[in-house]
Figure (tube, rainbow, N blue to C red):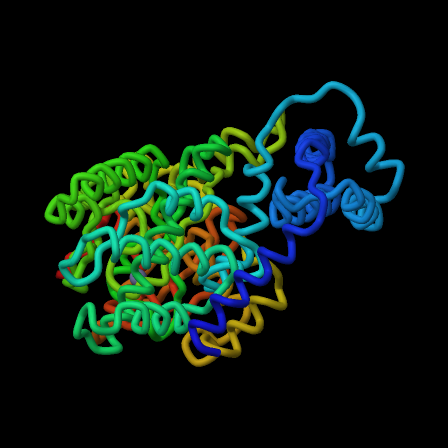
Length: 457
Ligand SMILES: [Zn+2]
């Protein structure tokens, strides 16, 4: 489909909606009722049903809503959560919370899979950013003609839904003659403007939902760049993202291209961010995109503290594990005291089950440790030894403690303990230089511990 066809489709869609009699007040009333209902709904499924109803409403918009739309939206929610539950949720005094706090979680699933935008629904926050105007330049041009075309193209992208390829093609056609650039340039421009706009929109969403921290989530596969591998998992205060967005928009408004590039750096050097503590990241590094054609996103981060029921005895311990895990996500080694606490905790770790141990024994251990009893005990002994080394890493979102004992020829015996559950997961022999695999969220970080090994260096 050509860009012209797409555009005319989008226009048709809007005209079609305009012939219906609108009822903006009824829209607002239902929107408020549903938003309040969320705060009275305890179960996940019920909340999701209501959020879907809210999404449906946001899609329609107050300008396109007619009174008759109310019944089918409520009927759809009722089907998922049951009539009495919905009625109860829609009555009584409420604590006002933004629906956004729940939307963040709902969105996360789609976004974590690497989908770059929800094409079925307009991204209203991104559209607000576009409305600020004067945000984009093409080549070195920055005139009103360029602005208008770019704004319209992006508006259609976020509102009507186009793929990135279609947006690139649209820009190439719209600006044909204005700039003698090759296809690659338009692809990059389309991607870059759309990604930045979307991420700035997400910051607004976090602010509205009073989310304090976000976590960087790269799309991990064989194409993941080194920059984004280095950023993956880091926990960043929303205040930093807000500041970056404000600085960027301010630079753009005064057409200060140099500052715009400084406050939001596109890293060309692949190793520029590797192993740096989050607090020491170079200026201009907060929100993705971190480089051109970046697929990384952010998601709301809620610490484990918020997941533990009030009054539970697990609170203190969970808080400690949570702190260790946040530090690991941020590439910070634990303090000596924290490392000692981690070792003490791990000394009480047990194999998750006899079956799991037997499986690992067959896979990696029979030749070296012989019996199941010998294998099981060897793992516990390595954790307890005074001269073992301790590393931590994050694998599939969970913090791991890695205990290693030196063997011959640069090899180590490696015991992996899942920190939160305090369970031993495996014991096997590895090269001391390869404690991490490419699929780890955060590669192994050496911890300060007694008996620091000399043979690593
Ligand atoms: Zn990236």
